[in-house]
Amino acid sequence: MSAILLLRSVMFYAAFYTGSVFCVLAAAFASLFGEEPLQAACDAWSRYHRVCARYLLGIRIRIEGELPTHHAMIALRHESFFEAIDMPALLHRPAVFAKVELLSIPLWGRLAAAYGVVGVERDQGARALRAMISAARHFLSEGRVLAIFPEGTRVPHGADGPIQSGFSGLYKLLKCPVVPVAVDSGPLYHRWIKRSGTVTYRVGETIPPGLPRAEVEARVVKAIQALNQK
Image 1 (tube, helix red, strand yellow):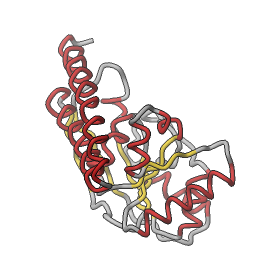
Image 2: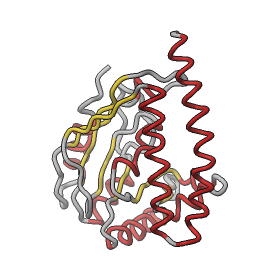
Image 3: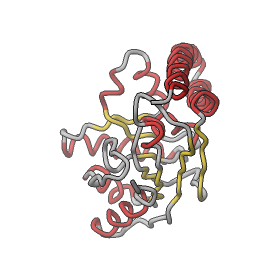
């Protein structure tokens, strides 16, 4: 293990997580003045993460293709916390579907919910799906994009992850296009000792609404795994 990689990783953890404390406090203060200041503060936290990753870890970002800015569901590959933290910087004010446990984090969880993070309860069946649909329709009516990890959890780079049923339910009931996005953050970021390099987001072909479940899932899997090579 390179001493330089270790040093850069330690500096990153110290800078990002210490800075995150102040970012959360700033977001809590901003929330007193309404939704717009809160969203701006959360977006700033995500951009701060990019700065720390770029200058302390040596991680660059490349985006191949054009991401939508409204009325679409973006389905992303999930290999590490990188793309989860990067979401507000990557997309314009996304409404993000994430595991419900994150919303129990003191203060951060309350602010995340106010920003537009929707808790996913995978073991709650139809009741949870109805709540997700209601929240998704609300955010779509506001002109926001939806962001979801269709595999439901982080999947190691080079491995395949099955599409969760919640994604298919959202696709069927929301009747909005899906834009699949591949990402290859795992080899650089999914470890305690981070590595330098380039994280690529590759935007796949837009999938129209109304396709059979098997077809849409097959197209999403193919697109989000476009960078999934060992």
